[in-house]
Every structure is written in structure tokens, then in C-alpha cells.
Amino acid sequence: MQRKCIDLENEIRGLLKIFGVKLPLRLSRGGFDIAVRDTIESDPALSHALLPMLQARRALFDTFTELDRRVRKAAHADPVCQRFMGVPGVGEITALSFKAAVDDPARFKSSRTVGAHFGLTPRRFQSGEKDNPGRTSHAGDTDVRATLYAAANAMLMRSITWSSLKAWGVRLMKTKGRRRAIVAVARKIAVVLHRMWVDGSDFRLGSEAAA
Image (cartoon, rainbow, N blue to C red):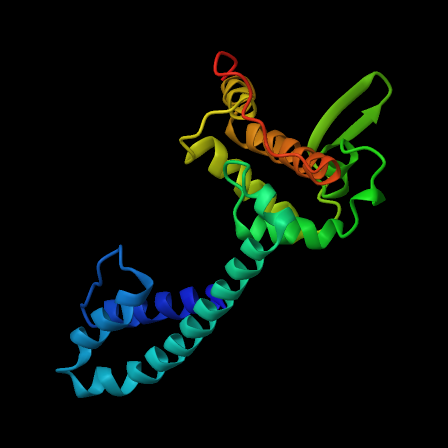
């Protein structure tokens, strides 16, 4: 729903640009409709062309908003997801996606295998004396892998809460680059979430000195 809504917004922006109208780059989702209507209300031809698209976008946006509200409510009503969201960067979508995909934590004998299950370990290319790690294996659920990557990115780039895990990721970013560091932190987050689920424990930030 969100993707389709954004696609329609971009289409409307593109059509307005043809007529010399450029909307501000930053508009809130709710403010987009108002901005376009204010722009086209004095032009019957533009209104005739764009109002149906605006109505379709509004229907998509309202549906997305309702689904988003339900997701947030479901996550906050679930004790396991509430603990997951104690990890900096982990939000409602990541918590619910991970819980739904793992389903039963007893499926994994070791928490370390969870990252590999979701394709967050590098493939290896071995030939003779060569042993080169490649990109991630991309195994498992694509959506869960994407949410874990987003959570790791949020932890490293946006969260102001410092932890031993974030400190480790920042050090890795300096030596291995941003993308590899995010993948590594995403893998660690998967391991941590599984261990928290098994133990019934909360996320530990680690010592302040380590951070």
C-alpha cells in the first residue's frame, strides 16, 4: 500500500512538472493532498486530470494508515515483540516479521544459525587455494532480511542510544565499510532477538565504557 501510494505521488509530481508546477520536495503524507488541491483548483483541465489520481492515492493512504495502526497495536500487545522493541532500531514491523518468520524459537538449536537462516551470512567462493567471501547468501525470507537490515541501519545511523552492539558496528564500519557493517549488525540483531526470546530476557546495552 505504501509503495503504491508513493508511486502515485511521483506520477502526480511528474504530471504537474510538465505544466511548470513544482511541489516542495518535503511534504507530509497528509499534507500532499492539500498541496496538490491548492495548486490545481484554479485550473479545470488539471483538476479533471489529477483529481481521480488524488482520490485513488487518498484511498491507498487511508488503507495504509489503518494497516499501520493495526500493526503497531498488534506489536505493542505482544510481550515478545515488546521485548524485541527494546533493541535500538527494532520497530514494530521488524519485531512482528521476525516473530512470525521464526514462529517457534526451538526450531533453532543455536541462536547463531538464525542469521544464516535469513541469508545474512556471506557466500563463499572456494577454488584451490582461493577462499573469498562474497555477498550475502540471500537465503530465507526476503522481507525479514530487509527489516533486519533496516533495523541495523537505524541502530547505526539514526539511533542516539549507544550500546556495545552499536559500538562494535561503528568500529566495523570504519574498517569494512558501511554496507558490510550494517549486514553484520543485522546478523547480530537476529541472533540477539532469538536469544532474548529463548531466555525471556531484555536487551542489555552493555557497559558504558565499552560503548
